[in-house]
Length: 108
Image (cartoon, rainbow, N blue to C red; front, side, top):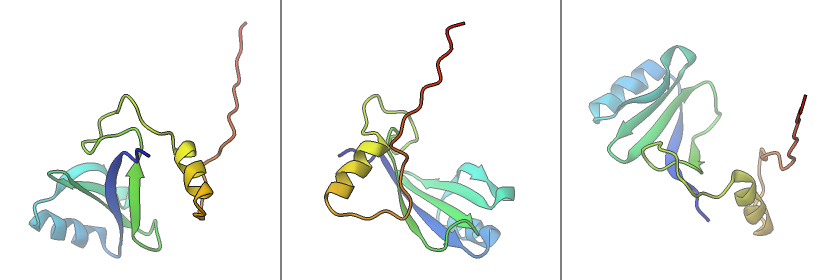
């Protein structure tokens, strides 16, 4: 199973203080929006997300389809495939990926 890039999403109380703390450790901004209370920070291959008011707890985050530098992978396992495999192993999900596919196709 290919889970793609890995990061830890941290639930923080003060995004400004957290940003300053992680910058002292050598992390730099790699994405996100400070005004929306979320940032992605990188230090080499290490990636963390800091989120204020979005998650009740810290979360392990996997991004199928991306490498550790957030570049698209040519081949990867779709999240629905990963979910199906993990459910078959007895894992429960708080939120599930939608397994239904809808195509709206207009020819004229």
